[in-house]
Length: 217
Ligand SMILES: [Fe+2]
Picture 1 (cartoon, rainbow, N blue to C red):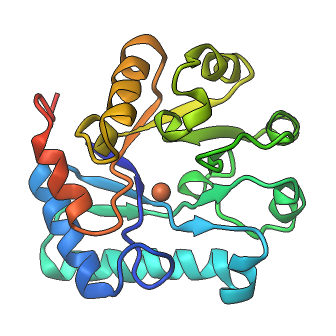
Picture 2 (picture 1 turned 180 degrees about the vertical axis):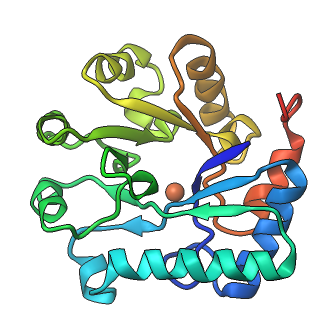
């Protein structure tokens, strides 16, 4: 079982504080049956470059360091590199400069997120530009965007434009409230989900998943 969205890398974003917490998170994830985790620390154009000028290399190094630690600790989880990119009009330029890290560092997919409360006007353009460059955008937690919660047909339009979906398992467990939970259930039933993820920022983000029925199926 693979977790495709996790803030398990230590000290980079608002996820894991330090290596100790990353180990804790991996232990809980392992107990739930996960064997692989794509580490997806936040990338925000401008801010990320300011705080972490070596961002992509740093992610690769941190992934290696965490993998070595988990091996030593005897935790059967393998971490893969990635990032969660806050879409912005300048993302294309930054992408071309190699400023962010693609999904699994494969150069083919990019996990992207949008503001939760309003839909920016340039979303379609940026998605189109990414597709032109051979990148498949994976939309993180579509169930959390309030402007699409009663308009699943809008999300479907993006699927038709070549976007893939990543649903948060925590949404199904009620982590973000009833409205997000209901939307997640509908999306799960009615649309094609390509990836599921914990979007865990701490060990609690994994613990809550034990609430889900039929989790391992
Ligand atoms: Fe996230």
